Image (cartoon, rainbow, N blue to C red; front, top):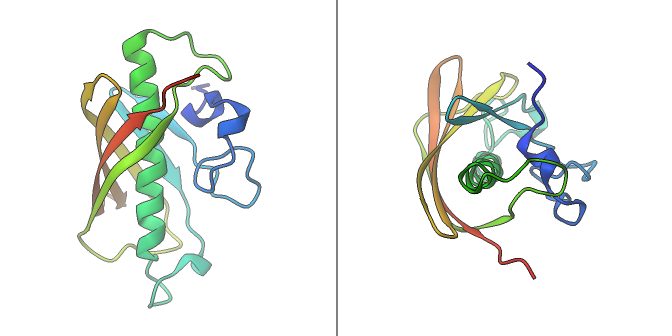
Length: 153
């Protein structure tokens, strides 16, 4: 499969995000793709991202992953709704209005994380997205986001 990640369609001036910016050499550079109607992202967090215990992922990192993957999925879903021809710079831009994360169990470091996002609702400039964070089929965190499309111009 030769898909281009959602984040690679962001305009250059919107590509410096620590979580998903392709132009941020020190960031995570998340890459999200469609699998059916779900946005999916995989990342392998290194041990220096641990929280209080050395083998458990820092909760703030989990929240930022949920935020950036949710934003990418919201943008891609809005682009689908508007039937935007995807090309670099064409992706609608979104900001987070609300982010809620429930931590269900400790998330291990050194294991590939799978983030799965489903769009709950698109209403004008507002997109509600639900995201799960899991390893090996075990869901460790759930997030719910309200994303707002930025007005252009």
